[in-house]
Length: 244
Image 1 (tube, rainbow, N blue to C red):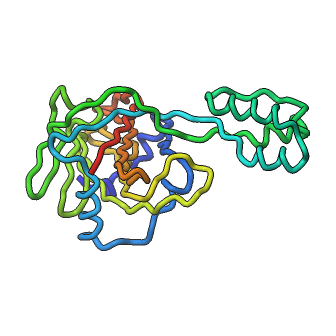
Image 2 (image 1 turned 90 degrees about the horizontal axis):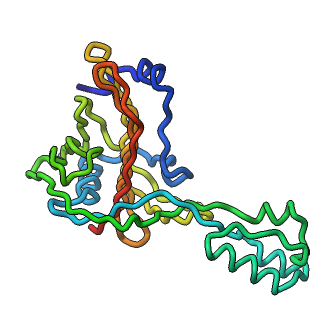
């Protein structure tokens, strides 16, 4: 079933949902069209392999003191007060304003930023994937995270098919060049999953991404909400990292 022939509007109206990625230009700036064979090869290279060990990660944030040290030094602020602020930020705590910094409270707040990070959950698992020369499938097995079960990738085209019966084509994602991002995304592929069948009343709204990280690992993110026979499911998400 082609998603292009189905309208998502009924699903959106019923669920009132949006799709949240990691944010920033790294996930929204889609590159120009790529030849299908090259794009399929990129998908194949980033997908996990059979019996691949993966780590489950979560979204987190850290406090960054963007240009604070430079500004405090330039106005002759207290080095001791600055060290206290930087130490608090390094521990993940929100630093307290100190007038000895030589800047106003408003200026101090402007130099604090919350940056996204990937937080290890401490859980790893091995994926018993089914692979042929033409297709890679996440089987319906208890050892596979529930959110991923039934996903099937056509290795010739890069298209992904979901259990609800829809197929989606990948697009290439360009690397992020934003200086204030702590998640070092180096590009990858992404599937926008928007589909609804008014006959079966099955639908899906979500996003699947495979990103190459600066560390050399791959980050798989999948967020989705589905509808089966007119009954909406709960919004769910999974993030995995692994080496390829």
